[in-house]
Length: 162
Image (cartoon, rainbow, N blue to C red; front, side, top):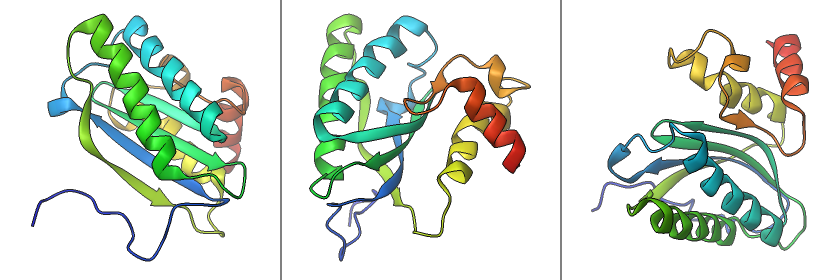
């Protein structure tokens, strides 16, 4: 049996849910170290989120992977469709600009339980560069943010709830 993450067998990934996602770069190459490369990818992630009606509560581009905290905004939102679009769009434009493959085939997803606070997962995303030893403070790392909160707001929420 292949060694890759599996979707939940009894869950259809459609409806009003929140998800914590991780996409790894192809062969864990360090592709997210320059703002221009990240900009290409991020524009396409936002495009997919808009088309599939997902809010992007937090994101962090680490050198060899991407964390996303997303929330569906309608009853018919489909996470599998969002992920497929996000990876397809970003992979296409990244390859066109950089002549290399962007993503590993599979990613990781976790459906957040009702009792889990969005801000707790956002804290994990925002603090990822600190835990990895890349920076001392989240504000020192340029490649994270949110489409629903300002960076400063998110850092303040993280500090208050930490």
